[in-house]
Image (cartoon, rainbow over all chains, first blue to last red; front, side, top):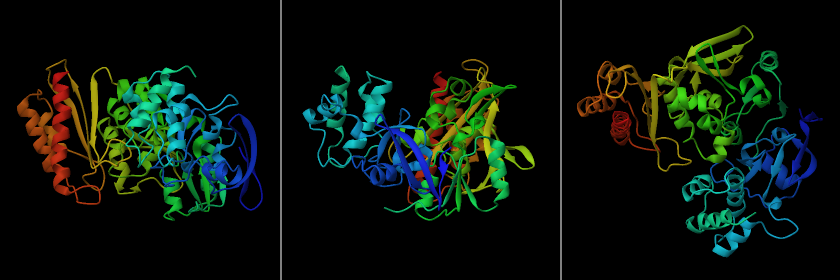
Length: 162
Length: 289
């Protein structure tokens, strides 16, 4: 259980993109607040804040979740992967490369969340069908692309070795 | 950003501990499971608790098991897990199908069966299946536990018989998947992230393909202040065989029994019509099996 501090503040220890992070948060702050305000990981976007747009999607203990729908204190002892955790020293993740090659990015606001949903589904199912990909990103709204290029990019990345 | 306002957070490790915290601070606490509805309502100010009791650390509320002929599903089981669980699919297919249609992948990974039932929304996806499975709700409080039939649990939109000092701990239904079959269908503006305009669940026992139906139950979502049973349709189908004529009669009875309203999501006329369509669809599929 997270440690109680004064004035409704709580110590949270979690792993973010492979690194242990310790943060003191308010009881009402969300995981999205923890990432953006406390850790300055602003790749995760703040969209609707009611769990409908998916712009704030991160992977929490292996599952895609809306970080606006999780209290920061609930993420204590958890493992979180954000968009900042996809690329490594060798360069962009194959999914990111595919999004660029296919042209799956227009304004870009939905892209981090879209990539995290895509990443989560490929972790569980490395060879998804087009229908499975469509379903995996059903919780991520995009107002620019019409989704076709996004699905194309995820299908292309799934064919390549990670 | 709009803020989630609350000042205290506790995460008990057992149901007993959670009940104790609730008992010692009446009116102070709100119970949190998946948070997919609660955080929205805390953000818009509809719920302003002094503190939040996070139930997700209560292991005994997180399991699916078969106990004394019943499937017992802990209140904290997520929609994603329900949708893919073999025991639930065998004994309560309608519930698994409904869980698979809730919200989005992100919502299904967090949202829980207990939360869906507690919201007492007439459009809650999991509830019509629980009606046809004749499920019971386990409530645990300082005085002990009680089991409430699911069709007595919600008394109006957002209103339930759960007392303030009780916790919804589990849901159970008979493990009779060998003979009892159930299915669920719903209609919304789009497949994901749309609350149902109307939903239908049907369950029955059948003595082999083409055999007579018995123990027929039909439940309708989003067409009354709570989920309701379509009892005329049930009576029509009880003891009958599925045929074009019985399916038409059952669909007509369902349309007659629905009491829909017009609101932001749909009109009363459309809802009534679609109750019939979904009923026909489910029964036609069953006839072909």
